[in-house]
Amino acid sequence: MAKRVRYLVDANVLMEAHRRYYTFELCPGFWDCVAWNYKQGVLSSIDRVKQEIEDGKDALSHWVKKACPAGFFAATTDSKVTAKYGAVIAWVQSQARYKPEAQAKFAGDADGWLAAYAKERGFVVVTQEVPAPESRNEVKLPDVCDALEVPYLNTFEMLASLKVRFTWKPST
Image: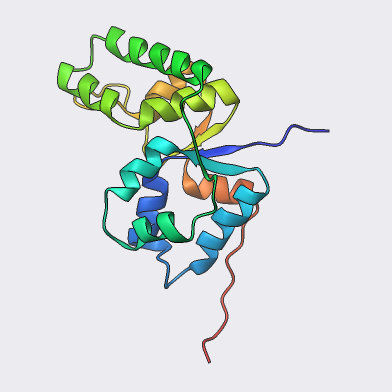
């Protein structure tokens, strides 16, 4: 039997969906899809992403607090994940191309934790970021994933992989 692919979503996946193309009013099916796939053991995120989202005072932060399935945001406190995070930060710090401000910002964001968790637990990272291997001002999650050999893709590639279809019904 083939191993099931598990996806770990970045904050920007949920934030962009909420703000742009899958708003709660326009496409509630996206949010139902997130919850359903979590319950199937296929889709989740981490506590650090939850913290980033809860900092906002909008419909997405409300969804996270009130409607998101319990357990969707996994804890990053496991010693193996913490050790992988140390390796992620060490790699970023070893890259002379990044300005110190970029390295410091990355160390304070959830992205390093996403990469570490995905590497340790065998997840595919889902992010709306794109690689920027020449960037000096910002450490991009896909570049870290490439360095760590962690697979990643964007929201739409994940939805296609899951064979998700949002269908339309006329309003009555």
